[in-house]
Image (cartoon, rainbow, N blue to C red; front, side, top):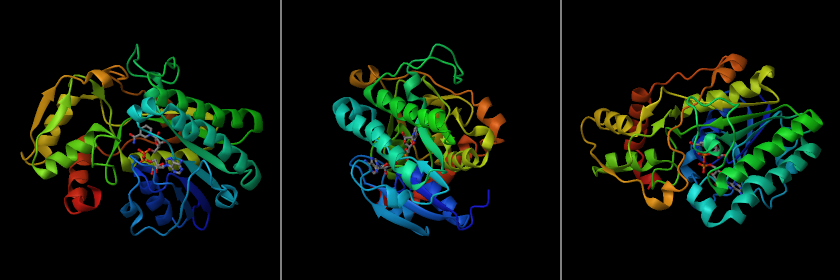
Length: 323
Ligand SMILES: NC(=O)c1ccc[n+]([C@@H]2O[C@H](COP(=O)([O-])OP(=O)(O)OC[C@H]3O[C@@H](n4cnc5c(N)ncnc54)[C@H](O)[C@@H]3O)[C@@H](O)[C@H]2O)c1
């Protein structure tokens, strides 16, 4: 697809994944309109869009008139979400408002303002819950372990319905744990790796909860490439895909790698998984993303060691902006 001068609309554009995507689209010459409400506790950071040629609008998808923003867009990348699992448990109504009700607002706005736009929706592996079989392909049953999983599943399903009923080209990407530059590292709200990075760079030990759970981390440039590939490949349209990343590693493996990559500065301690989180924890997960690879030609390029190294280097000189 020739992105040059094409209008794209990115929701959640000041967040971790959204801002990285905005940078990549702007570099391809696209006219990027980014919306973000700087939701408390989310990944939005004012520095995330530094240096990107993006038309940024601060506003809430629950309230703002979405039509002028979506007007004439060739592609809508839909990443705005309440992403906190504990947050969703604490306030499930706000969670539904953003992840489900506001999705229907955007669907209605897009019908009027961008009836032909391709939509790439950011979905999550979270709602598979505790899985019976690894790796996880798209046929595994959905069993959301928390309120956030329910609302994210509802949001995805409204988008897929829009494909079935109106024939809109919609692709939903069920992402696994993503990491890299522009991740929220102030605390563990976005992912455990965020706070690990902060601790390593501050010379403090980080905590590993449990340690034997498997994860297949995706480096953010690979996530960005997946979003773009999903829009570009007609074979993806109308489909839901799991997106994986690096080969599965236990949290202990990841912690060891973090220590190694940091040049021995990093230290960690292992703790019991906290009881309140254990109730909604998904255990081990890694994706079978064969379907997406086949349909789009995408494959992850950045290995874990390289990805962690790039991430630490990126934050080393920007730590103050992200605390
Ligand atoms: N990062 C991951 O590991 C991961 C894994 C699975 C799925 N996802 C999905 O990818 C998408 C992006 O996630 P992320 O990690 O970049 O999180 P993020 O918190 O950094 O980005 C989401 C952005 O949406 C914005 N937002 C939230 N509610 C809003 C509202 N009502 N109006 C306007 N903006 C609002 C937030 O301010 C934030 O900037 C989400 O849909 C998330 O569910 C991410």
